[in-house]
Length: 102
Image (cartoon, rainbow, N blue to C red; front, side, top):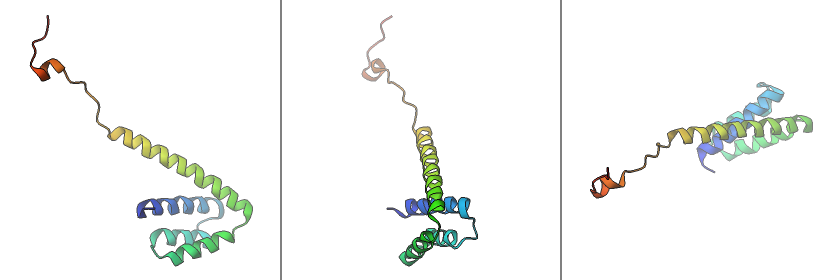
């Protein structure tokens, strides 16, 4: 997984955690720090803190994170579509030098 994709995944998870348990929760702090760092010990700490959240809250976090990921994916697809140049058909008679029939 590339770093930018890894960071986006952690940021989506962090936002979902914040929505359910708040930004002052240690799980949110751990996920946010793991998103900013390449140190895998921070990933393990985030996992440990996340496991301490109640099952009900984790289910809600999962639902929120999946929904956010779908929204972000839709935005990325739409942005990619806008970047594609408009296709224009070539006039083959001009390309091969043949006069147009009138």
